[in-house]
Amino acid sequence: MINFFQEDVSIKVPTPLKTKRWLKAVVEAEGAQLNHLNYIFCSDEYLLNVNREYLEHDYYTDIITFDTSDEGEDQIEGDIFVSIDRVKENAQNLTKSFEDEFRRVLVHGVLHLIGYDDTTDESEAEMRKKEDDYLQIFKEL
Image (tube, rainbow, N blue to C red; front, side):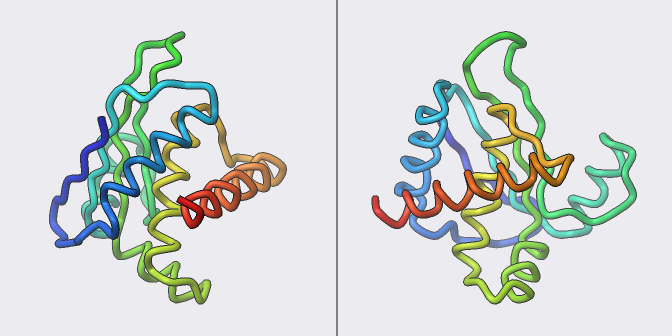
């Protein structure tokens, strides 16, 4: 199950049913099963407070992913916080549409839950490639 929530922003998720089917397909393509996934859309300030409180980081970010699945399970479960402010700014800076950047961030969070990271140049490049591949699949659905 995938849920979309809003905290201190108002956003209409583009093509919500297609987006949920796509994210479920991504999880399955990676050999896992989707249990429960919550996306919480919020502002920069809201996510900055989450970053400070739970991760002890004092900077803005576009996404924070919390894995709530049982260890050793192949069931994907988590809470993914997304700053809509960051997504809008990143889309503008990268000359991408809001929808494309929004979907990139959604799949980025799922990839983290599956086990990918972006802490090195090599792992970041691998994650970007996965994001690009899955964004292409979205367009083909």
